[in-house]
Figure 1 (tube, rainbow, N blue to C red):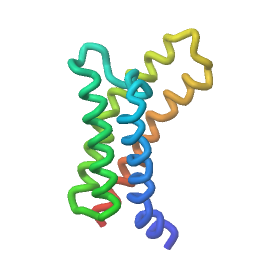
Figure 2: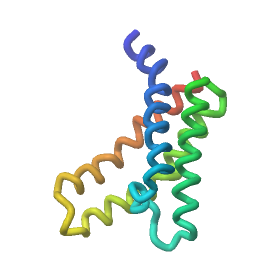
Figure 3: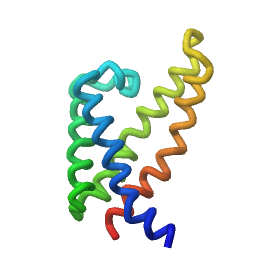
Length: 123
């Protein structure tokens, strides 16, 4: 019973995260600039597109659109290299507090339950 309830509400929790993150992408793009690997063209456009994709996925998850779960899972996989880049960059920055470096690395395995939450929208 508890797992079924978690499955039912997981997409809504992910939608809330996507809403906040998507808005921050657009309002304070510098927050996410370090996630975009060097060498990719048009980092501002990539950042904006990522934020818009999060907002679109959030809307889809909230309305239980059939495409929203798989699209959200794909989005989470697509941004994973950026999370890795941020963790590596954080590790090599001696000015960053150690706790912030730890947070950067700790968020990597969190992608797994987030992808799981996205896929619960299919049920």
